[in-house]
Image (tube, rainbow, N blue to C red):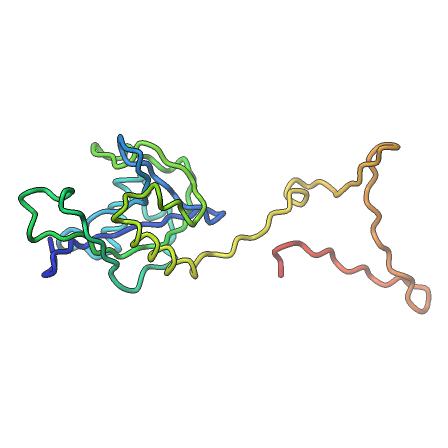
Length: 208
C-alpha cells in the first residue's frame, strides 16, 4: 500500500524502561541495530499497526506497555534504489512513519524475539536514549534523529533511588579507629516552657 508519492505507511516504536533507556534490537544475521518498526496494513490505524508490530517483533502485548506520545506528522525516508526490489522500482520511494514513545510496564521477561516464525531481531539490549546512529543503516538515520528529538520532551521524569532507604539500612560512618557508628541526628533545642520542639520529618528524595 503506497501513497501517491510512493511512500509506504509505517510505524516505529521507541520503547522505554523505568530508567528511560530504550529497546535496541540487532537485526537478524546483520550488524545493524534498530527500533521495532513495520508497515501499516490496509484498514489498520497507526496505533493498531504499532501493537501488532510490537507483538510480532518483540513479543509484547498492549497490557505490557503504556503509550506516552507519538509524532505529530509523518516522518519520511527514501530507500536507495539498490535496496528496492526490481518490480517495485520506479514507483516505490521509501517509508513514511508515525513514531510512538512507549513505556514498558511489564517485565523484561515478557519480551520474546521468537513470537512469530519470521523474527526481525536475534538480540537486544537496553541502550541510552540517544542511540548511536552510526550502527543504524544510513538512510534511516535522519528519521531516527528527528523522531528521538521530537519525542524527547515527553520523557518521563526518572525518580532518584536511595539505596539506603530501599534496603532499610541506616546511614553509617565508618571509622578506622573502631566499629561503624550511626551518624549523629540533630535534636532541636527545648522550646520555651521546657518542652522539646518536635523534630521535622526527614525528607525523602523524590517526594517533592
